[in-house]
Image (cartoon, rainbow, N blue to C red):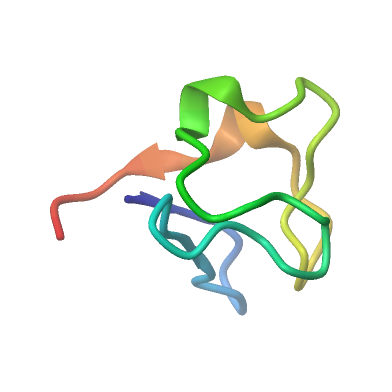
Length: 54
């Protein structure tokens, strides 16, 4: 899982769930997200996300 680093956000991208708002299907690995994908809550870019253990 990958977490948004924004101070007031904390969104966690879970590959098992995907990103409904961004039309990313469940099962999509973080590495396979488009380079221009952004946090669906606050808009932070993919490159800033940090890997976290489930």
